[in-house]
Image (cartoon, rainbow, N blue to C red):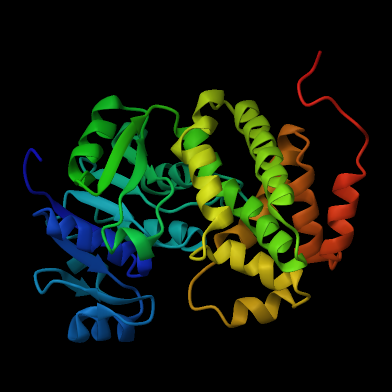
Length: 337
């Protein structure tokens, strides 16, 4: 590490807490901004995020505050770890506090509903900060494992190689390996849309299907994510990397995956609203499903799995019927002759 940094992590959920703990252990000076006053107070007192990351100690050196001005003061690296639907609002709160020379790290995965913008596009639009100072830090990285120092690899994607390398230096540890990647579009599309496929993978589990089904689902899911990403301007090889197949596999098979869990419960016949009402943390794939279908329409890309997931979640289509319809689509070559 070149030198310790002053870093604010925006969002005191499981991932924000995990990144703050990781950065503090590396010697950086870290502040967590948690918007819920009661949770910020409890985390400060207990030195633990009991709701979202139980059992992980938060060092006394980490400041936890609900005051965003106090949280930002003096910090030259800003890490966004809020849910995707809260990103724009958080960026608006932060805008007047930015000097313009900060490094902005986006650890949020998703596509904004309505605008269909990627997370880096939202930050750039709201704050006016140069996109060369923005990096997405994403990959197959469940907070439950990173916080316990289970070996993990992610990518830092930026339009600027120097920014990507700087983020790599800030975050990389012997148990948290960071690669750089210039394909911001591909990385952000891959890590957002894999959550939709993870919901479908959970439905397979809930329906009692086996490994054959899930293997096919992941393969064809990656195919449609890649089709969309390339049409949007991404590089195809990105989807063979950590932000593509790496994050897809992890999210679709993991017991930690909230999106896979939602799909599994729906596959068992439960109602979406009932499942979500019981969850403490956010399943990003539910909102991203709407955005995925919107992007497929906008870019005229065929995304049959995402479309079926949308119909199950929002139009009441039975999961079993959706699977049958996918299997009975007109025959096609896997690779065109």
